Length: 81
Image 1 (cartoon, rainbow, N blue to C red):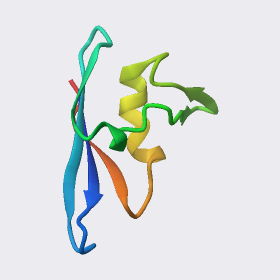
Image 2: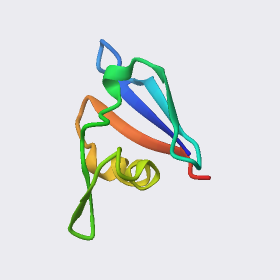
Image 3: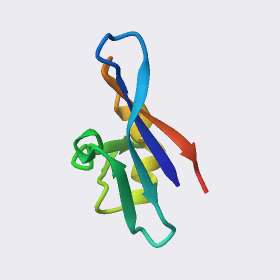
Image 4: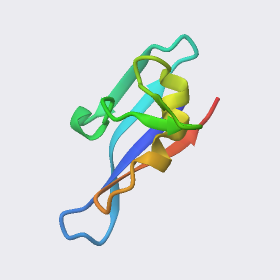
């Protein structure tokens, strides 16, 4: 699974990829780019329960784009395999 984290450019007119998170089927992961833009400490809510990245990286990644809603940073699932 691949999730890209997009941030606004300095002029605020466009978005660029700040970081890319790749999670393998075994739960191991790799971050390319600036790690400060990947909020691994942010929990996601799923059916009323909190899911942490540490507990279930794949589920967390599938739902981070609905939790991370800021005008400055968004998450986009690029590949959900």
